Amino acid sequence: MNLQTRLGYCSATTSDTAYRSKIRSYVLCGINITALFLAGLVFLANKAALKRKYSNLQSSYQLQENIDVIYVIIPLSIVQSFCHLLLSAAGAILFAYEGIVSAITYRILLTATYIIPYYTLIAPVLLLLLLKWSSKKRTTKLIAVTNLPDENSTYFATYSKMWDVTVDKYKF
Image (cartoon, rainbow, N blue to C red):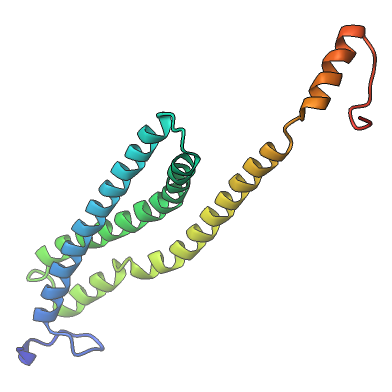
């Protein structure tokens, strides 16, 4: 480690360490985009598999649960990939200007374009909104299932229509 190339900043970070951090950022950005692509493929595979009719209720339920989980994961993954891509692009652009501007200006620009604090602020809020949306969606499904008419109410409603009799549906 060459400590003679210390940058004007509040840490002991050298330009070699900054370079390694940039390489790590590019690798992580590639991993994020690959994971997002694979999550999309799993989502599409589950959607296609769900369209096939299964006689096994467990398989159908598991596929639907997978899709519901991916609905929560994909928006958060998109935001994370976007932030990491933005961080990597800003780092690449700043790396091109490293020799042109002074070390202090370079560090100011690097600090100004550091996206991680914004992501740290946005991610929990987004996750909270996604979980509330998922819970509301699940509650709506449960209410729809529990409000199905039973065979008696269907029979008496048809009977009422046929004879034009007004019957209160709760007095069966």
